[in-house]
Length: 170
Image 1 (spheres, rainbow, N blue to C red):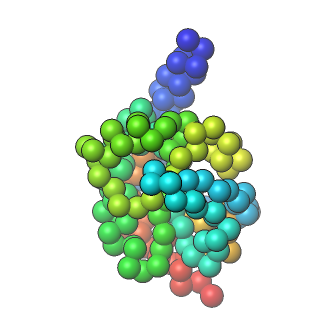
Image 2 (image 1 turned 135 degrees about the vertical axis):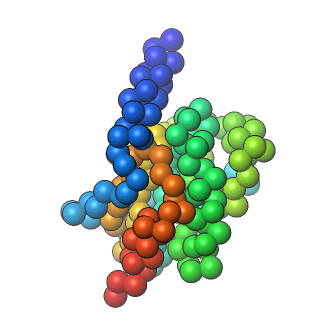
């Protein structure tokens, strides 16, 4: 019961933030380094974040029960279709659910980018995720450059421009 109330509270809080936070990305001036992780995707493949150094990566924390998460997933797929040939990676990290929940979700919302499983929520905690969805854009040195709390249209030209500009920085 407590967990259900907490989830409902977080959902309501961040649903409001999703609409109030605007459509852009928040620049993180201190550019903190991201904690490493080793997670499996829904197919059982391992992903270690430190292996991705040298790449710009969009990391989205989400859950299937989260309405703003569900709403932004099609735009993330459209963004992925544009970015994958440019060497920019996208990862979706599902927080606290199992493969069955993901498979049920992707039957209605097919995505081609990797969906990783943070079943114990340890990665979302170490990355200091306060609500869902939360997305970080990571530079090639493994630092958080942008954060987005709440849903976004990830294929919006102004968002994609900011992501692509990170790849151009020497």
